Amino acid sequence: MYLRSNELLKTIDASETISYESKVKAMVFLRHHLHDNLKNEYITREDNVDLWQSLKDRFDHQKYVILPKAKHEWLNLRFLDYKSIGDYNSAMFGITSRMI
Image 1: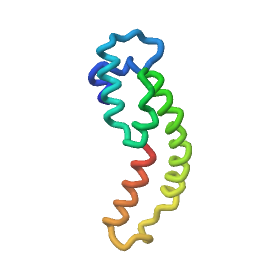
Image 2: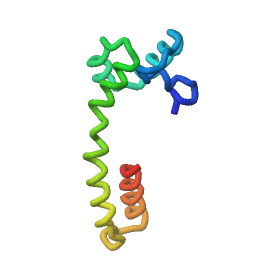
Image 3: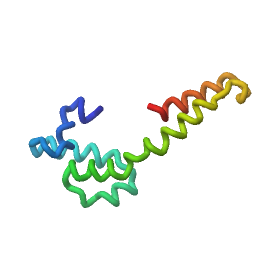
Image 4: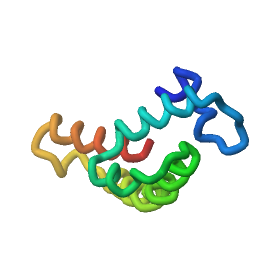
């Protein structure tokens, strides 16, 4: 959303030609929001497209792992399994947040 709102979304698209300033702004944002362990691993990446593609290759499979489990939990969600309405709501919102 940040990249889109600041018109930097094109910086992660290989087919676009972007100004150097835009690339730098996007790279600063991407690196700032990486976990410290990932920063050390991806410190040598100097191209936004390369960094974005590497992260996408690493983490894009998560939806194939998390979504089936969340769907299974949703199908087996029963109100009677929880002691309070708050516990049920918490479980329900946790499942739906993983399904998005």
